[in-house]
Image (cartoon, rainbow, N blue to C red; front, side, top):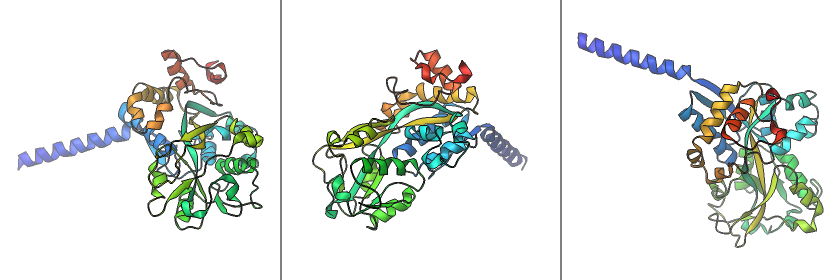
Length: 337
């Protein structure tokens, strides 16, 4: 009997010790987009690196809108989110979805960066039997252009507008959350679904399970000067989807698409040690980080600061300086000056 009591006591002590060590971990709060896309996978990858290589873990609230998450980050309510490069200047200049937020310029000053990566490309998807083959064919159709009040809505309607089509006049813009939009597309309540996805994403193939899908490529930018200007904005680039990338997609030629970059965003409120550990966990184990998605290989020394338009966090700056990265002067955090 005494033996059983001793064993039970040891089990209780072990369980208590495990529980105590779990609660001793520092928990960082993060926002992420809907599961499945490149941005979500990138957020998960950062979370996994923290859990494995630091005394911290990340609690992710998925299905969030990036522009709203930026506000929460700047206010110190969360510790990590992906920041759309295009949204930073909107917040800084109190424009678009930040027009009524009087504190937007001040909040923008509290955003800090960890690194930049090309998270995904805009996939303009339609079913192969829709008759829609090019941008001009969007006329008269229902087109999903991102969640209400999102930077995606502004970017996508601006992109389509630059190609000569006006929302409400030439096509019907539909604005829902990402999940509802996907279901509406499956139910054929949308003619075109525009979704960010990394190259080879299963998210794209899931729409082609029951019927073939076509991806609509960009028009000739040389014939559309306004579109060319949009594509030259920070955070945008022209990418190519090779034929055969997705099962169930009927395109037989390379497809030109818009690639977008996000900043791994943190707030000025986070301590230098926390962000130093976060940066170190990723870069000191970069091959492991790459294993979470092939497109994450674009996180490298040549591109890590490309298009970044917020200062580095002082903790990230300390790591990069120690490792000899060439840090642009514009990214030196005010705390380090």
